[in-house]
Amino acid sequence: MWVKGKTASGFLTLDNLELTAENLPEVLNNLKANFGGRLTLGGEFGLNGDSVAFELRIDRTRITMGYDIWSGAFIMAWDSAGDKIIEEIESFLR
Image (cartoon, helix red, strand yellow):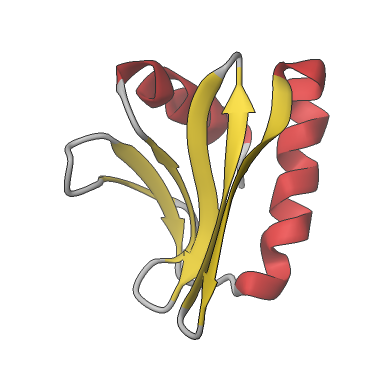
């Protein structure tokens, strides 16, 4: 179940504690199906023992998607434009 919250910087995040890092390709495919050409993969990628994250661009807005042991799978905004994208994602993500 996806739960909307706020990051430490005050922007929106969707977290799903039921999912693991192995579920991220499925989530990404869902985003691609819904955003089509509006979604591109960014250049940033991070990996350590407890987390993995990578950058997406939706309508040229930076969004980070990943997994960590505290949030499960997450999709987070970096600014108010990203908040609007998170709201859109919440409308179709199950």
